[in-house]
Image (cartoon, rainbow, N blue to C red):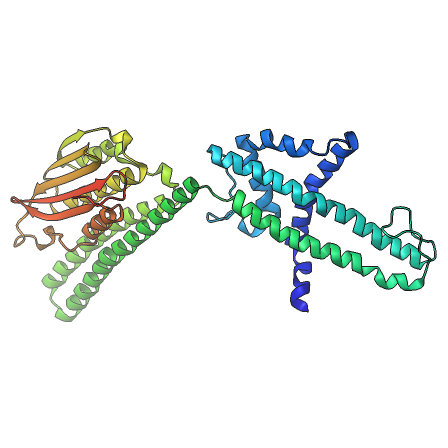
Length: 397
């Protein structure tokens, strides 16, 4: 019983009722002007629905009145964007027709069922029904007051059912188009990828720095040797500086995570990365060929991140050494290669980053787009090579 009455206590029931009454009010005005042509508003909805901005206006209104809980959500089932394709425009036309067809009976029921309850009250009071009542020529009786709630109950039931039906129609006809769904999926995928990368960076870099600092501090306190303590403090200071640099880089990525996917840097801006590496003292030999501006957005953005991580690894592990960068767009794929001299592992074990989280991230980015990334020694040098299909689906050979 309480479950049946629950919709009557929900505010969304009445905002949906208002949404259904709005076109009914306009339709009634037209009938007052031209009662012999009730089909004109239905016909007029076709050119109106083909306007791109009409989908935006209807989407905002539907989301506000039919599903207010979806406001501001990226995964809202009712879109608030202008029509981008003809398919979206025709879906808007169908939405307007559906809205009119549902609004007219709800509007009529609102008027006539409310009038029926009022007439039942008048009849019970001995005044008799009005000429507009659904049942005419009846005698006045007090027990008609017992029937007064029935038309209102029928009206509320109709409002609840019609509200749910119009909401389902809005989700179907005003929902995101396939292009919008793909864009939203791409954005969520990129955000998850960035979050995973941030987690890896924090775990590997900050966790390592804290571990080294704790171990060095404990050893210095136990040794009670001034020379050892000085060396330990120097090691802690160096590790802390490296951790701060890594933390700043991770926070920069975190700040970018709120940026829309379409505004993220792409390989068209690769010169910015190369100039930054040159500014750090590295000698960069860059060879860029092919139309980078024609590379699909998802592939170009991941290629930029791969190049960024590759240059960062070079500067972190090998210092300001000569670096050769090759970016090529040909044969339906993007090829990216970064090579630098391979340091002697015996002299600097950290210079061989074969198991670092950055290289794992490069391989994961390539695999996400159906491509492949190779990292490791090659002909006496350290090489990162990635091949990404331009459609983001085919696996690279």
